Length: 173
Image 1 (tube, rainbow, N blue to C red):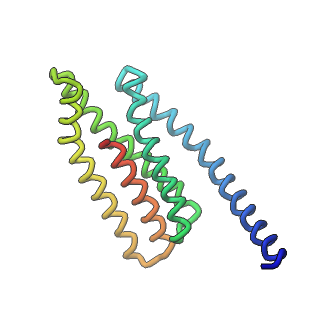
Image 2: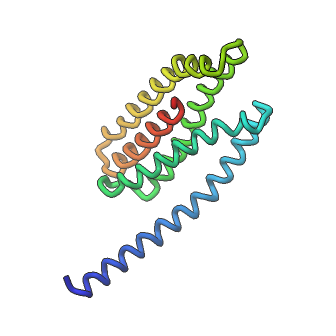
Image 3: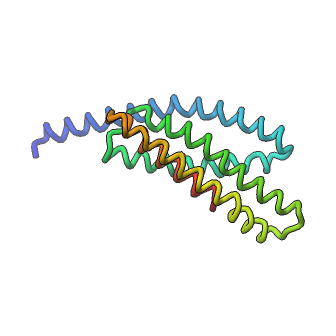
């Protein structure tokens, strides 16, 4: 190896890292605004900060794992630069929805007089199955993007699919 080749590689790596930093910085402002709006709506609906925050926290944990896996997958598959943003938007939407569904079922069971452990089992057995079915349906629908034959659409489908799967697993665990 020549030092010149190493220097070019380092310059390219720095350029890529600068690009990633810019994309993440731009996305962070958008995510903060969306989360604030969602939190206010859930706070009005549930009337409690903890009850409103739990679905958001659950979705964010799954979203973090999903975006990490999308970033890893980008090393092997051509994923457009806006792919992680699209995956995050879809993942945040379905993640909060799936978590709300399971948490609402749990809450109903507790209000019906069941012990917390029994309520959790019931929530996962009923709402959890529906969440898994819905998640698989979304992933299959995203797979329809492969029919278009556009490589960047394939990457978007893979990125969004990975994120949907991770938020789905987070919602049912």
